[in-house]
Image (tube, rainbow, N blue to C red; front, side, top):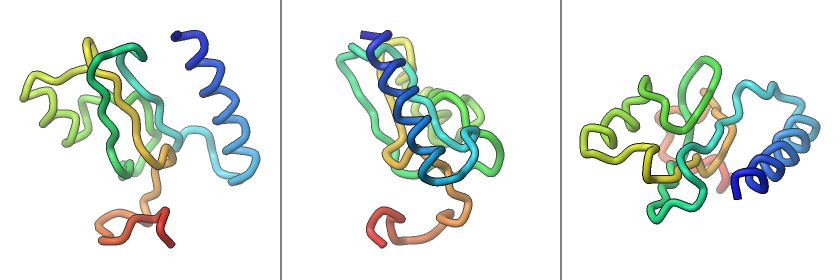
Length: 98
């Protein structure tokens, strides 16, 4: 399953970068085992620098989840919008609805 996920991610990343014209380093990576019983989807990445794995301990949201005992050892997570957009920080409307 991990190989299938990796192949699909690479296809998505290549296509997204080609269509958007944006850098690859602003695309998030999912984290945790793909066959996990628990899946988490966050809404919008909002960090200003390069985006990495879903279970980034520098993220305030991830820190809160980890304090509650939820982590990448048994939960699979990804970001709904994949690409971090600083321009969408603190806005009430979802960027996908515009």
